[in-house]
Image 1: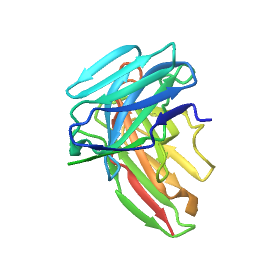
Image 2: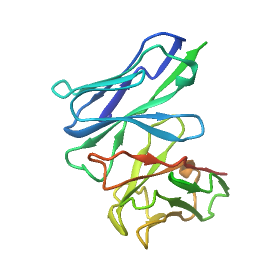
Image 3: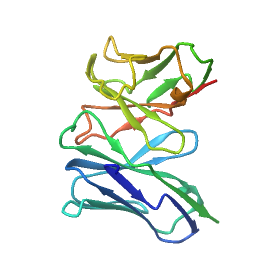
Image 4: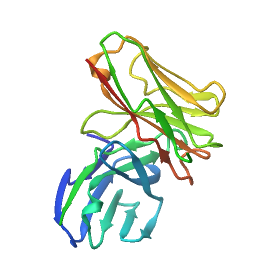
Length: 111
Length: 115
């Protein structure tokens, strides 16, 4: 079992739909990151969370430390949101040295 | 440029050939990371530098993999005697002082195909 699991693996939505991607982890963490990866490999950091909720534009990220679960929400989705969304954690043992990544969620938003 | 720069962007190597992948982190960033990402999977940690010191190399898959950052800025990941299973995207990332409290900046990756 992976330490970081995401669901769903693939998600197709129509433009304007509200989207939720989930991340569960099984280890103690010092921070959780949501990343976006476009075709061609470039990765962009969206959020870093250790508690609560963060919002940036149409993106919202939440984390429940007790349940070891985080969600990434996209409101009013748009085709340009199509990308792979990756959840990654910095664990208490490795804090400062590495991230452990989920396998990513491929999001396709159709016009 | 202001971002993390990697070269080459694409490399095709014959099996058994040595390759060298370069990473130019953001100027002033202390921490530098290398990750390997196989097709359809999330990145896997390879190694971590703090300035010129390689603090963690536990993710390097074999002794054919070697990384250095001799002056605490540019880093090179070297793969000797490449094998087909080495085909992947090699991602470099940097941050100001490590993960906690700092934004991570990734390069666009070096796509290695071993034929």
